[in-house]
Image 1 (tube, rainbow, N blue to C red):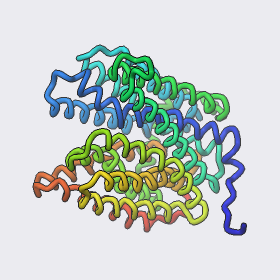
Image 2: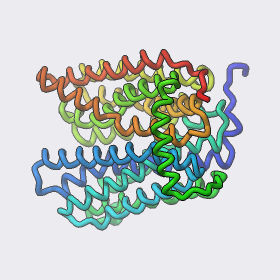
Image 3: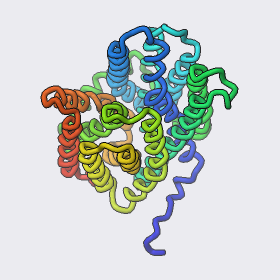
Amino acid sequence: MGNTIPIPKRLLTRDTVSWAFYDWANSAYATTVMAGFFPLFYKEFWCSHADPTVSTFHLGVYNSVAALVAAGAAPVLGAVADAYRIKKRLLLFFAALGIVLTGAFYFIAQGAWLIAGMIYIGATVGFSVGNVFYDSLIFNIADKKDFDIISAAGYSLGYLGGGLLFSINVAMVLRPHLFGLANSTAAIKISFISVSCWWAIFSIPLILNVRETRAESADTLLTTISMCIVRVGRTLKRLRSMKSIGLFLISYWLYIDGVDTIIKMAVDFGISVGLASRHLITALLITQFISFPAALIFGIIGTKLNAKKGILMCISVYVAVTFWAYFMDETIEFYILAAMVGTVQGGIQALSRSLFASLIPPDSAAELFGFYNMLGKFAAIFGPILMGTVAVVTGNSRLSILSLLVLFVSGAVILCLVDENERAL
């Protein structure tokens, strides 16, 4: 009995559960739309007339533009949210943007590749920027000592919810007639509607139950934005003296770049070694459902040990995955690697969020989470370039996967220098 880890009471309160369920809500977009059906449907329906390399270039541009817009807007909007205490309102605005535009995919005609791309950029910006304010709302619903387990609970629910809807959507696409649909095209279009509804419905608990006190300000919004831009500049200078925060952000950018590169390149790598698409979809579902309990377990590990040690454990697993991927030949190996990634993917994300939250001052939470999310948006830019360069220079795509070790190892080394007990004033 003495070795058991009690679940914090805060984890089971109405506001905490409501906050965590937003991860369940919006993860449907990340799974079904971003990782699953949008790239496939764009190539086969909206841009089917073009050479596959052209549509691949389009997708890269859309993701880069969305990332740049989100990364540029996040710190300033975060500072505005801190000044006015409107994190919740801004979250709901960007969530609504993503929800409406996701539903709009249903109405885009075949061949309308440019409209599809513009709507995808808008929906992804809504999803990404909304997460800045969602992450920073953890200060409204939890004490510092509970950050690890509550952050993990959010990611855990996100993987479960996103995986559950995605599995239903995959079944719809593979067996459309069982759902009363004419074909797989109709099933994918309905899947976009299902994501929009799922995202909207499961955001309601946060709307009703997570409270935020409004700040009184005599300044106009334009004046506040101008002041916040200046404040962001000052914060960038302050980061030089915030040693642990600065080191953590550098470390995070490196290792999360490796994590996101594996997420985004796994399917292409599987194809390159001859795996069938049905196996790749199965592997994605394995990752989602294993990530559900694993994220929560790592939250407990973070509470029992500390978040930094938990992150280092996760990085060590990614190092092992990277080595194994170099030698992989069989489908069963890809499944095993997917399971290994599932055990740490949610954990490294959840513990990174909670460790950062424990380092920063609460009155600058949204602003500093803006920088945190900005680095997250820029992640998976350097990694794919690194992989591509190594592949071109060596002529061996397997060697390219080993190049990610640079990101994981350097990120781990810098993370070791972070003092998790230091708190910025």
